[in-house]
Image 1 (cartoon, rainbow, N blue to C red):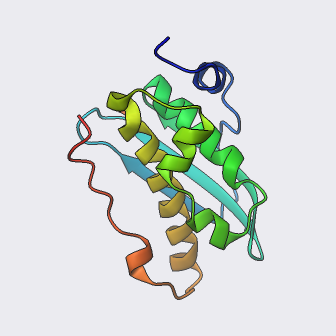
Image 2: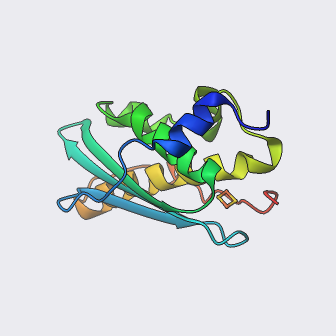
Length: 140
Ligand code: FES
């Protein structure tokens, strides 16, 4: 079977779908080649992600990746959120087909873009090298 049960479950029943009106950080990223777009909303209390929602206009793997990524960062400290990688998302989903790995990259990028937005809005200093532009050229 091409997709794991976890991928199918998160695709059919995505967690944390929606918008946070009072978001502290919003990150929107897209993949120019497939045209898919992912948006992550973070509510941050102190140094903790107290709530997270997402909107993904994209393929099933992108929806499953964003659902899983939101589950992985909810309630976590910001430094743990920074450590989220697309690899960890893929592992939590019990794998993605090789040609779908880039969909999980969108989830990592969107989470980090939302965190960066929070830092920028609040004048919180950070090391810009922690937010590299993830080049998805090899994705397709
Ligand atoms: Fe574009 Fe999956 S095909 S994110």
